[in-house]
Length: 484
Image: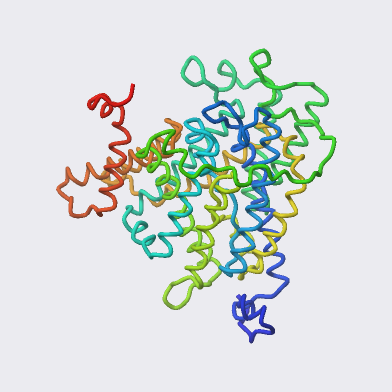
Protein backbone atom coordinates (compact mmCIF):
# COMPACT_ATOMS: atom_id res chain seq x y z
CA UNK A 1 0.00 0.00 0.00
CA UNK A 2 1.23 3.52 -0.77
CA UNK A 3 2.53 5.70 2.04
CA UNK A 4 -0.06 7.98 3.64
CA UNK A 5 0.24 11.71 2.93
CA UNK A 6 -1.40 14.85 4.28
CA UNK A 7 -4.98 15.44 2.99
CA UNK A 8 -5.15 17.89 0.09
CA UNK A 9 -8.78 19.04 0.59
CA UNK A 10 -11.82 18.65 2.85
CA UNK A 11 -13.11 16.02 0.40
CA UNK A 12 -9.83 14.13 0.75
CA UNK A 13 -9.97 14.54 4.53
CA UNK A 14 -13.54 13.18 4.79
CA UNK A 15 -12.78 10.10 2.72
CA UNK A 16 -9.28 9.72 4.19
CA UNK A 17 -7.92 9.08 0.72
CA UNK A 18 -4.41 10.39 1.32
CA UNK A 19 -4.38 8.91 4.84
CA UNK A 20 -5.09 5.49 3.32
CA UNK A 21 -2.41 5.90 0.67
CA UNK A 22 -4.80 6.10 -2.26
CA UNK A 23 -5.57 8.57 -5.06
CA UNK A 24 -8.41 9.45 -7.42
CA UNK A 25 -7.12 7.24 -10.21
CA UNK A 26 -7.07 4.14 -8.03
CA UNK A 27 -10.48 4.89 -6.55
CA UNK A 28 -12.15 5.49 -9.91
CA UNK A 29 -10.54 2.41 -11.43
CA UNK A 30 -11.55 0.33 -8.41
CA UNK A 31 -15.13 1.60 -8.63
CA UNK A 32 -15.40 0.59 -12.29
CA UNK A 33 -13.95 -2.87 -11.65
CA UNK A 34 -16.30 -3.51 -8.74
CA UNK A 35 -19.28 -2.55 -10.93
CA UNK A 36 -18.28 -4.82 -13.80
CA UNK A 37 -17.58 -7.64 -11.36
CA UNK A 38 -21.03 -7.51 -9.74
CA UNK A 39 -23.23 -5.88 -12.41
CA UNK A 40 -24.59 -9.35 -13.14
CA UNK A 41 -27.06 -8.75 -10.30
CA UNK A 42 -28.94 -6.30 -12.55
CA UNK A 43 -29.49 -9.29 -14.83
CA UNK A 44 -29.90 -12.08 -12.30
CA UNK A 45 -32.14 -10.44 -9.72
CA UNK A 46 -34.93 -9.78 -12.25
CA UNK A 47 -34.66 -13.39 -13.43
CA UNK A 48 -35.27 -14.53 -9.84
CA UNK A 49 -37.64 -11.95 -8.37
CA UNK A 50 -39.33 -11.12 -11.67
CA UNK A 51 -40.17 -14.68 -12.74
CA UNK A 52 -41.59 -16.19 -9.54
CA UNK A 53 -45.29 -16.09 -8.73
CA UNK A 54 -47.07 -15.27 -5.50
CA UNK A 55 -49.93 -17.12 -3.84
CA UNK A 56 -52.38 -15.56 -6.31
CA UNK A 57 -50.37 -16.65 -9.33
CA UNK A 58 -49.19 -13.12 -10.11
CA UNK A 59 -45.73 -11.93 -10.95
CA UNK A 60 -44.38 -9.07 -8.85
CA UNK A 61 -46.30 -5.83 -9.31
CA UNK A 62 -49.57 -7.80 -9.47
CA UNK A 63 -49.06 -8.43 -13.16
CA UNK A 64 -49.46 -11.56 -15.28
CA UNK A 65 -46.90 -10.26 -17.79
CA UNK A 66 -43.48 -11.69 -16.96
CA UNK A 67 -41.70 -9.24 -19.28
CA UNK A 68 -43.26 -6.28 -17.48
CA UNK A 69 -42.29 -7.77 -14.12
CA UNK A 70 -38.69 -8.33 -15.20
CA UNK A 71 -38.43 -4.79 -16.61
CA UNK A 72 -39.70 -3.24 -13.36
CA UNK A 73 -37.40 -5.36 -11.19
CA UNK A 74 -34.42 -4.45 -13.38
CA UNK A 75 -35.00 -0.72 -12.94
CA UNK A 76 -35.62 -1.01 -9.20
CA UNK A 77 -32.62 -3.31 -8.68
CA UNK A 78 -30.27 -0.80 -10.31
CA UNK A 79 -31.86 2.16 -8.51
CA UNK A 80 -31.64 0.70 -5.01
CA UNK A 81 -28.13 -0.64 -5.60
CA UNK A 82 -26.99 2.72 -6.94
CA UNK A 83 -28.47 4.85 -4.16
CA UNK A 84 -27.37 2.57 -1.31
CA UNK A 85 -23.86 2.09 -2.71
CA UNK A 86 -23.48 5.85 -2.95
CA UNK A 87 -24.68 6.17 0.66
CA UNK A 88 -22.18 3.52 1.72
CA UNK A 89 -19.43 5.51 0.06
CA UNK A 90 -20.50 8.85 1.46
CA UNK A 91 -21.38 7.76 5.01
CA UNK A 92 -19.59 4.45 5.57
CA UNK A 93 -16.54 5.71 3.65
CA UNK A 94 -15.71 2.12 2.80
CA UNK A 95 -14.97 0.56 -0.63
CA UNK A 96 -17.87 -1.88 -0.63
CA UNK A 97 -20.84 -1.95 -3.01
CA UNK A 98 -24.39 -2.89 -2.09
CA UNK A 99 -27.04 -4.70 -4.15
CA UNK A 100 -29.79 -7.29 -3.87
CA UNK A 101 -28.38 -10.31 -2.06
CA UNK A 102 -28.26 -13.63 -3.88
CA UNK A 103 -29.73 -16.31 -1.68
CA UNK A 104 -31.87 -13.74 0.07
CA UNK A 105 -33.71 -13.02 -3.17
CA UNK A 106 -34.15 -16.75 -3.75
CA UNK A 107 -35.68 -17.09 -0.29
CA UNK A 108 -38.11 -14.25 -0.99
CA UNK A 109 -39.02 -15.54 -4.47
CA UNK A 110 -39.27 -19.29 -3.87
CA UNK A 111 -40.17 -19.58 -0.18
CA UNK A 112 -42.08 -16.45 0.85
CA UNK A 113 -43.93 -15.30 -2.29
CA UNK A 114 -45.72 -18.64 -2.92
CA UNK A 115 -47.28 -18.34 0.55
CA UNK A 116 -48.48 -14.73 0.32
CA UNK A 117 -48.71 -11.73 -1.98
CA UNK A 118 -45.57 -10.01 -3.22
CA UNK A 119 -46.45 -6.94 -1.17
CA UNK A 120 -46.64 -9.09 1.97
CA UNK A 121 -43.27 -10.71 1.19
CA UNK A 122 -41.59 -7.33 0.67
CA UNK A 123 -43.15 -6.14 3.92
CA UNK A 124 -41.21 -8.90 5.67
CA UNK A 125 -38.02 -7.66 4.03
CA UNK A 126 -38.69 -4.14 5.33
CA UNK A 127 -39.34 -5.47 8.83
CA UNK A 128 -36.14 -7.50 8.69
CA UNK A 129 -34.15 -4.42 7.75
CA UNK A 130 -35.74 -2.36 10.51
CA UNK A 131 -34.95 -5.09 13.02
CA UNK A 132 -31.31 -5.22 11.93
CA UNK A 133 -31.13 -1.42 12.19
CA UNK A 134 -32.50 -1.64 15.73
CA UNK A 135 -29.92 -4.29 16.60
CA UNK A 136 -27.16 -2.05 15.27
CA UNK A 137 -28.35 1.04 17.12
CA UNK A 138 -28.72 -0.84 20.43
CA UNK A 139 -25.47 -2.81 20.11
CA UNK A 140 -27.48 -6.04 20.27
CA UNK A 141 -26.33 -7.22 16.84
CA UNK A 142 -22.99 -8.41 18.11
CA UNK A 143 -24.76 -10.44 20.81
CA UNK A 144 -26.89 -12.29 18.26
CA UNK A 145 -23.84 -12.82 16.07
CA UNK A 146 -21.99 -14.34 19.03
CA UNK A 147 -24.92 -16.61 19.98
CA UNK A 148 -24.84 -18.73 16.83
CA UNK A 149 -21.92 -21.21 16.70
CA UNK A 150 -19.38 -20.01 14.18
CA UNK A 151 -19.36 -23.18 12.12
CA UNK A 152 -23.16 -23.10 11.81
CA UNK A 153 -22.84 -19.62 10.34
CA UNK A 154 -20.60 -21.04 7.64
CA UNK A 155 -23.01 -23.91 7.09
CA UNK A 156 -25.82 -21.44 6.40
CA UNK A 157 -23.73 -19.82 3.64
CA UNK A 158 -22.86 -23.21 2.15
CA UNK A 159 -26.50 -24.32 2.21
CA UNK A 160 -27.61 -21.15 0.47
CA UNK A 161 -24.92 -21.78 -2.14
CA UNK A 162 -26.34 -25.24 -2.89
CA UNK A 163 -29.85 -23.79 -2.89
CA UNK A 164 -28.83 -21.25 -5.54
CA UNK A 165 -27.09 -23.99 -7.52
CA UNK A 166 -30.12 -26.25 -7.69
CA UNK A 167 -32.28 -23.31 -8.75
CA UNK A 168 -29.85 -22.69 -11.59
CA UNK A 169 -29.80 -26.35 -12.63
CA UNK A 170 -33.59 -26.63 -12.57
CA UNK A 171 -34.20 -23.38 -14.45
CA UNK A 172 -31.65 -24.34 -17.11
CA UNK A 173 -33.28 -27.74 -17.65
CA UNK A 174 -30.23 -29.71 -16.55
CA UNK A 175 -32.27 -31.08 -13.64
CA UNK A 176 -35.95 -31.82 -14.25
CA UNK A 177 -38.72 -33.18 -12.08
CA UNK A 178 -40.56 -36.34 -13.06
CA UNK A 179 -39.96 -40.07 -12.77
CA UNK A 180 -37.59 -40.76 -11.16
CA UNK A 181 -38.04 -37.89 -8.70
CA UNK A 182 -35.38 -35.90 -10.53
CA UNK A 183 -33.67 -36.63 -13.81
CA UNK A 184 -30.59 -35.52 -15.69
CA UNK A 185 -31.67 -33.41 -18.63
CA UNK A 186 -34.55 -34.69 -20.73
CA UNK A 187 -35.27 -38.41 -20.17
CA UNK A 188 -31.81 -38.84 -18.64
CA UNK A 189 -29.94 -37.18 -21.48
CA UNK A 190 -28.77 -33.68 -22.31
CA UNK A 191 -30.67 -32.73 -25.42
CA UNK A 192 -31.36 -29.58 -27.40
CA UNK A 193 -29.64 -26.34 -28.33
CA UNK A 194 -30.57 -24.51 -25.10
CA UNK A 195 -28.89 -27.18 -22.94
CA UNK A 196 -25.78 -26.95 -25.14
CA UNK A 197 -25.88 -23.18 -24.62
CA UNK A 198 -25.97 -23.65 -20.85
CA UNK A 199 -22.99 -26.02 -20.97
CA UNK A 200 -21.03 -23.55 -23.11
CA UNK A 201 -21.91 -20.75 -20.70
CA UNK A 202 -20.89 -22.77 -17.67
CA UNK A 203 -17.55 -23.76 -19.18
CA UNK A 204 -16.91 -20.17 -20.28
CA UNK A 205 -17.66 -18.87 -16.79
CA UNK A 206 -15.33 -21.45 -15.26
CA UNK A 207 -12.51 -20.57 -17.66
CA UNK A 208 -12.86 -16.84 -17.03
CA UNK A 209 -13.10 -17.37 -13.28
CA UNK A 210 -10.01 -19.58 -12.97
CA UNK A 211 -8.08 -17.14 -15.16
CA UNK A 212 -9.18 -14.40 -12.73
CA UNK A 213 -10.74 -12.27 -15.45
CA UNK A 214 -12.45 -9.28 -13.85
CA UNK A 215 -16.15 -9.28 -14.57
CA UNK A 216 -16.06 -13.00 -15.44
CA UNK A 217 -19.70 -13.62 -14.56
CA UNK A 218 -21.03 -10.61 -16.44
CA UNK A 219 -18.86 -11.33 -19.48
CA UNK A 220 -20.08 -14.93 -19.53
CA UNK A 221 -23.75 -13.93 -19.34
CA UNK A 222 -23.35 -11.44 -22.19
CA UNK A 223 -21.27 -13.78 -24.37
CA UNK A 224 -23.61 -16.73 -23.84
CA UNK A 225 -26.61 -14.55 -24.65
CA UNK A 226 -24.99 -13.60 -27.96
CA UNK A 227 -24.47 -17.30 -28.69
CA UNK A 228 -28.12 -17.97 -27.80
CA UNK A 229 -29.32 -15.19 -30.13
CA UNK A 230 -27.30 -16.67 -33.00
CA UNK A 231 -28.60 -20.18 -32.31
CA UNK A 232 -32.19 -18.96 -32.14
CA UNK A 233 -31.76 -17.02 -35.38
CA UNK A 234 -30.47 -20.12 -37.18
CA UNK A 235 -32.42 -22.95 -35.51
CA UNK A 236 -35.65 -21.21 -34.46
CA UNK A 237 -35.81 -23.16 -31.20
CA UNK A 238 -38.70 -21.24 -29.62
CA UNK A 239 -39.92 -21.08 -26.03
CA UNK A 240 -39.90 -24.07 -23.67
CA UNK A 241 -43.38 -25.55 -23.19
CA UNK A 242 -45.19 -28.87 -22.82
CA UNK A 243 -45.21 -29.17 -26.60
CA UNK A 244 -41.62 -27.94 -26.90
CA UNK A 245 -39.73 -29.30 -23.86
CA UNK A 246 -36.35 -28.57 -25.45
CA UNK A 247 -37.05 -24.87 -25.99
CA UNK A 248 -35.58 -21.83 -24.27
CA UNK A 249 -36.44 -21.17 -20.64
CA UNK A 250 -37.98 -17.81 -19.65
CA UNK A 251 -37.03 -15.66 -22.70
CA UNK A 252 -36.55 -16.48 -26.35
CA UNK A 253 -33.23 -14.76 -27.16
CA UNK A 254 -33.96 -12.16 -29.82
CA UNK A 255 -32.54 -8.71 -30.43
CA UNK A 256 -34.98 -6.21 -28.85
CA UNK A 257 -36.52 -3.32 -30.74
CA UNK A 258 -34.59 -0.94 -28.46
CA UNK A 259 -31.75 -1.30 -25.99
CA UNK A 260 -32.63 1.69 -23.82
CA UNK A 261 -35.83 2.90 -22.23
CA UNK A 262 -37.04 5.11 -19.44
CA UNK A 263 -36.91 3.04 -16.23
CA UNK A 264 -40.24 1.80 -14.86
CA UNK A 265 -40.38 2.49 -11.12
CA UNK A 266 -43.82 0.96 -10.63
CA UNK A 267 -42.58 -1.36 -7.87
CA UNK A 268 -41.42 1.37 -5.50
CA UNK A 269 -43.43 1.41 -2.30
CA UNK A 270 -45.36 -1.76 -3.17
CA UNK A 271 -45.09 -3.44 0.23
CA UNK A 272 -47.51 -4.41 2.99
CA UNK A 273 -45.72 -4.20 6.32
CA UNK A 274 -47.78 -6.68 8.33
CA UNK A 275 -49.77 -8.52 5.65
CA UNK A 276 -47.64 -11.67 6.04
CA UNK A 277 -48.75 -12.09 9.66
CA UNK A 278 -52.28 -12.68 8.39
CA UNK A 279 -51.18 -14.79 5.42
CA UNK A 280 -48.95 -17.32 7.19
CA UNK A 281 -49.45 -16.62 10.88
CA UNK A 282 -47.40 -14.78 13.48
CA UNK A 283 -44.96 -17.61 14.26
CA UNK A 284 -44.16 -18.37 10.61
CA UNK A 285 -43.79 -14.65 9.81
CA UNK A 286 -41.40 -14.11 12.72
CA UNK A 287 -39.33 -17.11 11.64
CA UNK A 288 -39.22 -15.81 8.08
CA UNK A 289 -37.96 -12.44 9.33
CA UNK A 290 -35.35 -14.20 11.43
CA UNK A 291 -34.21 -16.31 8.48
CA UNK A 292 -33.74 -13.20 6.36
CA UNK A 293 -32.03 -11.36 9.19
CA UNK A 294 -29.66 -14.17 10.05
CA UNK A 295 -28.25 -14.58 6.58
CA UNK A 296 -28.24 -10.85 5.91
CA UNK A 297 -26.21 -9.50 8.77
CA UNK A 298 -23.86 -12.46 9.17
CA UNK A 299 -22.93 -12.06 5.51
CA UNK A 300 -22.34 -8.35 5.97
CA UNK A 301 -20.14 -8.64 9.03
CA UNK A 302 -18.03 -11.35 7.44
CA UNK A 303 -17.79 -9.42 4.18
CA UNK A 304 -16.77 -6.19 5.90
CA UNK A 305 -14.04 -7.85 7.95
CA UNK A 306 -12.75 -9.76 4.93
CA UNK A 307 -12.58 -6.66 2.75
CA UNK A 308 -11.00 -4.54 5.47
CA UNK A 309 -8.35 -7.19 6.00
CA UNK A 310 -7.56 -7.39 2.29
CA UNK A 311 -7.39 -3.59 2.03
CA UNK A 312 -5.22 -3.38 5.18
CA UNK A 313 -7.71 -0.97 6.76
CA UNK A 314 -7.98 -2.56 10.22
CA UNK A 315 -6.72 -0.32 13.01
CA UNK A 316 -4.31 -1.31 15.79
CA UNK A 317 -7.16 -2.97 17.70
CA UNK A 318 -8.29 -4.97 14.69
CA UNK A 319 -11.37 -2.78 14.21
CA UNK A 320 -12.82 -1.47 10.95
CA UNK A 321 -12.91 2.33 10.65
CA UNK A 322 -16.46 3.71 10.79
CA UNK A 323 -17.82 0.20 11.33
CA UNK A 324 -21.05 1.37 12.98
CA UNK A 325 -21.76 3.68 10.04
CA UNK A 326 -21.15 0.78 7.65
CA UNK A 327 -23.63 -1.40 9.55
CA UNK A 328 -26.24 1.38 9.68
CA UNK A 329 -26.10 1.91 5.92
CA UNK A 330 -26.22 -1.84 5.32
CA UNK A 331 -29.31 -2.10 7.54
CA UNK A 332 -30.99 0.74 5.66
CA UNK A 333 -30.13 -1.11 2.44
CA UNK A 334 -32.17 -4.08 3.63
CA UNK A 335 -35.12 -1.75 4.26
CA UNK A 336 -34.64 -0.07 0.88
CA UNK A 337 -34.65 -3.46 -0.84
CA UNK A 338 -38.11 -4.16 0.57
CA UNK A 339 -39.41 -0.69 -0.23
CA UNK A 340 -38.11 -1.09 -3.79
CA UNK A 341 -39.54 -4.65 -4.09
CA UNK A 342 -36.19 -6.12 -5.08
CA UNK A 343 -35.38 -8.12 -1.91
CA UNK A 344 -32.93 -7.24 0.83
CA UNK A 345 -29.81 -5.40 -0.31
CA UNK A 346 -26.48 -6.24 1.31
CA UNK A 347 -22.72 -5.78 0.99
CA UNK A 348 -21.06 -7.66 -1.87
CA UNK A 349 -17.85 -9.64 -1.46
CA UNK A 350 -17.19 -8.92 -5.15
CA UNK A 351 -16.06 -5.50 -3.94
CA UNK A 352 -12.75 -7.26 -3.29
CA UNK A 353 -12.07 -6.92 -7.01
CA UNK A 354 -12.12 -3.13 -6.69
CA UNK A 355 -9.86 -3.32 -3.66
CA UNK A 356 -7.53 -5.44 -5.73
CA UNK A 357 -7.41 -2.59 -8.24
CA UNK A 358 -6.42 -0.14 -5.51
CA UNK A 359 -9.70 1.12 -4.00
CA UNK A 360 -9.34 2.03 -0.33
CA UNK A 361 -12.10 4.58 0.33
CA UNK A 362 -15.77 5.32 -0.19
CA UNK A 363 -14.92 7.25 -3.36
CA UNK A 364 -14.82 3.93 -5.22
CA UNK A 365 -18.35 3.20 -3.97
CA UNK A 366 -19.53 6.57 -5.28
CA UNK A 367 -18.28 5.55 -8.73
CA UNK A 368 -19.87 2.10 -8.56
CA UNK A 369 -23.18 3.54 -7.38
CA UNK A 370 -23.26 6.05 -10.23
CA UNK A 371 -22.70 3.26 -12.76
CA UNK A 372 -25.66 1.34 -11.28
CA UNK A 373 -27.86 4.41 -11.76
CA UNK A 374 -26.78 4.64 -15.41
CA UNK A 375 -27.67 0.95 -15.83
CA UNK A 376 -31.32 1.75 -15.03
CA UNK A 377 -31.84 2.99 -18.56
CA UNK A 378 -30.96 -0.30 -20.26
CA UNK A 379 -33.63 -2.63 -18.84
CA UNK A 380 -34.90 -3.85 -22.28
CA UNK A 381 -31.65 -5.77 -22.69
CA UNK A 382 -32.60 -8.07 -19.79
CA UNK A 383 -35.62 -9.50 -21.64
CA UNK A 384 -33.25 -10.96 -24.25
CA UNK A 385 -31.49 -13.27 -21.79
CA UNK A 386 -32.80 -16.87 -21.51
CA UNK A 387 -32.34 -18.98 -18.41
CA UNK A 388 -29.68 -20.99 -20.21
CA UNK A 389 -27.44 -17.93 -20.49
CA UNK A 390 -27.97 -16.63 -16.94
CA UNK A 391 -28.11 -19.77 -14.83
CA UNK A 392 -24.43 -20.75 -15.25
CA UNK A 393 -23.77 -17.72 -13.03
CA UNK A 394 -26.05 -19.16 -10.34
CA UNK A 395 -24.11 -22.41 -10.38
CA UNK A 396 -20.77 -20.60 -10.08
CA UNK A 397 -22.02 -18.27 -7.34
CA UNK A 398 -23.20 -21.41 -5.55
CA UNK A 399 -19.68 -22.78 -5.79
CA UNK A 400 -18.18 -19.58 -4.43
CA UNK A 401 -20.52 -19.68 -1.45
CA UNK A 402 -19.82 -23.36 -0.87
CA UNK A 403 -16.09 -22.71 -0.43
CA UNK A 404 -16.95 -21.70 3.14
CA UNK A 405 -17.33 -25.41 3.93
CA UNK A 406 -13.58 -25.54 4.61
CA UNK A 407 -14.27 -23.83 7.94
CA UNK A 408 -16.49 -26.67 9.21
CA UNK A 409 -14.96 -29.56 11.19
CA UNK A 410 -17.04 -32.58 10.16
CA UNK A 411 -14.91 -34.88 12.30
CA UNK A 412 -16.62 -33.29 15.30
CA UNK A 413 -20.09 -34.82 15.05
CA UNK A 414 -21.55 -32.34 17.54
CA UNK A 415 -21.12 -29.59 14.96
CA UNK A 416 -20.73 -31.66 11.78
CA UNK A 417 -24.21 -33.20 11.93
CA UNK A 418 -26.08 -29.88 12.51
CA UNK A 419 -23.97 -28.31 9.76
CA UNK A 420 -24.77 -31.20 7.40
CA UNK A 421 -28.52 -30.92 8.07
CA UNK A 422 -28.38 -27.17 7.53
CA UNK A 423 -26.58 -27.60 4.22
CA UNK A 424 -28.59 -30.58 2.93
CA UNK A 425 -32.11 -29.46 3.78
CA UNK A 426 -31.89 -26.06 2.11
CA UNK A 427 -31.64 -27.39 -1.47
CA UNK A 428 -33.52 -30.65 -0.86
CA UNK A 429 -36.56 -28.95 0.70
CA UNK A 430 -36.22 -25.79 -1.40
CA UNK A 431 -36.24 -23.76 1.82
CA UNK A 432 -33.51 -21.79 3.54
CA UNK A 433 -35.48 -21.55 6.79
CA UNK A 434 -35.94 -25.33 6.96
CA UNK A 435 -32.17 -25.79 6.79
CA UNK A 436 -31.47 -23.18 9.45
CA UNK A 437 -34.12 -24.63 11.75
CA UNK A 438 -32.89 -28.21 11.37
CA UNK A 439 -29.34 -27.11 12.12
CA UNK A 440 -30.25 -25.11 15.20
CA UNK A 441 -32.61 -27.68 16.71
CA UNK A 442 -30.22 -30.60 16.12
CA UNK A 443 -27.36 -28.59 17.65
CA UNK A 444 -29.44 -28.00 20.80
CA UNK A 445 -30.43 -31.70 21.00
CA UNK A 446 -26.80 -32.83 20.67
CA UNK A 447 -25.63 -30.38 23.33
CA UNK A 448 -28.32 -31.70 25.71
CA UNK A 449 -27.40 -35.32 24.93
CA UNK A 450 -23.78 -34.56 25.77
CA UNK A 451 -24.73 -32.87 29.02
CA UNK A 452 -23.49 -29.49 27.80
CA UNK A 453 -26.64 -27.42 28.27
CA UNK A 454 -24.61 -24.65 29.90
CA UNK A 455 -22.89 -24.01 26.56
CA UNK A 456 -26.19 -23.01 24.94
CA UNK A 457 -26.75 -19.26 24.67
CA UNK A 458 -30.25 -18.19 25.71
CA UNK A 459 -30.84 -16.67 22.26
CA UNK A 460 -30.24 -20.07 20.69
CA UNK A 461 -32.84 -21.52 23.08
CA UNK A 462 -35.41 -18.92 22.02
CA UNK A 463 -34.76 -19.30 18.30
CA UNK A 464 -34.62 -23.11 18.38
CA UNK A 465 -37.87 -23.38 20.35
CA UNK A 466 -39.49 -21.11 17.77
CA UNK A 467 -38.32 -23.47 15.03
CA UNK A 468 -39.73 -26.46 16.94
CA UNK A 469 -43.12 -24.76 17.00
CA UNK A 470 -42.75 -23.93 13.32
CA UNK A 471 -41.96 -27.53 12.33
CA UNK A 472 -44.69 -28.97 14.57
CA UNK A 473 -47.37 -26.41 13.78
CA UNK A 474 -49.70 -28.91 12.10
CA UNK A 475 -49.89 -31.47 14.96
CA UNK A 476 -50.10 -28.58 17.44
CA UNK A 477 -53.08 -27.15 15.56
CA UNK A 478 -54.73 -30.58 15.50
CA UNK A 479 -54.04 -31.09 19.20
CA UNK A 480 -55.78 -27.87 20.13
CA UNK A 481 -58.42 -28.05 17.42
CA UNK A 482 -57.09 -24.97 15.63
CA UNK A 483 -57.51 -24.43 11.89
CA UNK A 484 -59.19 -26.71 9.41
